[in-house]
Image (cartoon, rainbow, N blue to C red; front, side, top):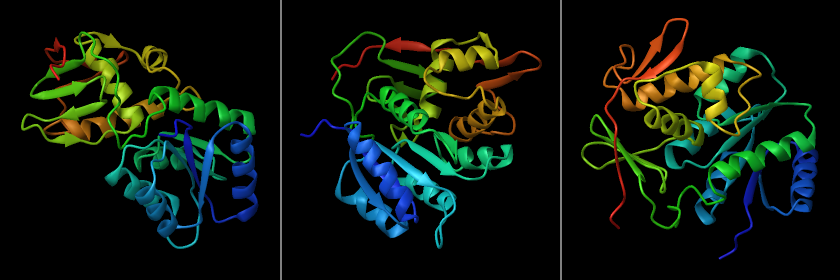
Length: 247
């Protein structure tokens, strides 16, 4: 099996696709290209993809629509590329399922650093396949009927059904579940969720918390697990048990 990280570059501009593909290939990545939604779906169906570089503004299906479609079928990290730099555009991009947001024009070295950061968080494994890490203690954190598998990076509900999380959502939930009943400031969350560049717009943490609440709270508008502490940040108000996987 080819261990080389596979990056899917999605942009309708052939010059940008060519620039990114050549640069990333020169940095040791395997690169595929797509110009539209049909190309994205075909690429994800035929091969394992480790990260998607997705342009926001494209004719037909735009990047936001495609990000939502990708997120419905896969946890593959999405890095959104766009010329829009307003805060609201960044927040909307994250809410659509993107894991990071990079405004054009950008430095190729910065893009490379962000790709490597997201690949470190996912152990350079295709998100459609469970990691094959050896057994270790405290691999599963259980709370309020939920089970978070830290090795397989899976969240399951009380019935055993899997709930898809983005890389950012998983890391945020991992931090919360690993620090139950402790107030965590936004700055502390930025520090604990390693590799994410959220400092450039601190409201992004609130956006990620809102997305996470929609997936684990019975009533996201009145959360009982991830509670807001006025002036302090957030607290994970749950009893958490730790156990090792038996398989």
